[in-house]
Length: 292
Ligand code: GUN
Image (tube, rainbow, N blue to C red; front, side):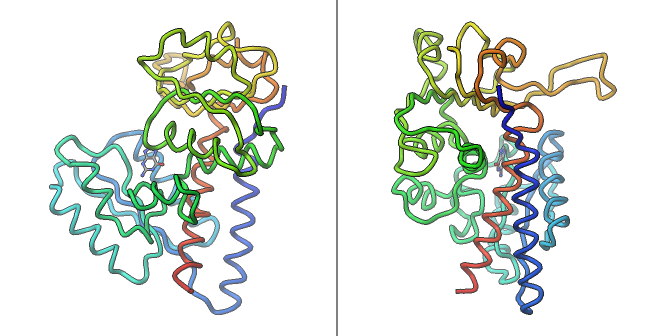
């Protein structure tokens, strides 16, 4: 069993980007600038956004964190987005999800300039992805593809089961893995909360991408020997033995699944760090495109 070490691979990618940044500086070029908007004080969102900003600093990008209160109106948020759309110094930006309930998420995502949409969530970029045109791939699926590629995991002709149909992970993942690309050419099945005989389907899978948001849902009896398992879940589970009062759990029951797996991502240290690295990669791409 091989651990797909997202922490290590993401560090490799960050080092590669840092080298690019150094040569940009040496050539007197502007370095990439990422902005992130956070609305409210959701603990997990604050952790993720801070990690994104910190990663920018580490590799030499400029970053701006726009921290808005929970009660921010949709109108004010849309104004902020417009400011970032028109600010030439900002190469790319993200609006951290989920947003408070009184804000229409789709309306917000559609307000982002597709050329600055480094999360790849704008309908224009989702459409471009589906048509296999150059675009910003959403960071989590992009990170999973990169991890599979760098570990030379064979995907061509394999049965891939994607668990979950979210706009951020499940749906794009299913599209990408069915396309003609290095970590692609797979036969993809999407399963979700209304799927019947789910375990029968997962037991036929050569590769499983677990992105359903239920902690430790996928257990050893639901997979076959030699399966490749990508765990996208990250849930805080109450745990009195931990100083923080919780532990982080994935969608996969690592203890029972890992003995049967040929490759598996850990939680934490698997998909999570890859997501940040690919957001940085998209921001670099946005900078390069703006130069052209
Ligand atoms: N919330 C969970 N994942 C993501 C992500 O990749 N981008 C943004 N903006 N919000 C998220």
